[in-house]
Image (cartoon, rainbow, N blue to C red; front, top):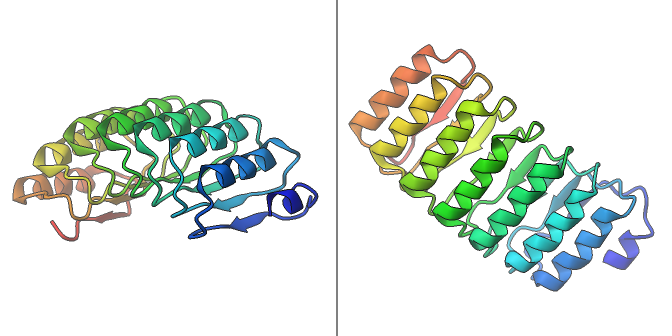
Length: 215
């Protein structure tokens, strides 16, 4: 497929989700990104890709100016894979949507992504659902939200944020003026955390939807 795509200059959408392409396949696709590709949508979800494949994709993104949407969800990226994606966000100026849900990036990986968000000015949608972000990772994400001026959609569901995490996000939302949609579902947020979020939503002028289901 990669060889065929290298000769096709018109394809703009490629969905390879659930195909077990692994790191070798990810590296082959990454080579397409470094060529004169017109690809705008790439789905590599659930493909047994580790941090090695993520590093290859990151290198491909460094010189790419067409890709808008990248899905790497349901891959065992780990913190190292998150670092690779953070490196890509530091240099890439086209990507607007990045999905890393169920990527096992943990709190350290969340800190890497948060660092990239503090300087990135193109990403508008980020999915970090079910990644073991926890309170420490949430603290980093919250700090980034206070400084980021482009992100409009953020998924942090299933990350065990608790009331402390809700408070951190709430503090960031008091400053942030770009986020429109926030998913905090299934995060063990109690009555206090829900109250804090609700109070912030009441004063935030840009948020239109906050999901707190399963708390």
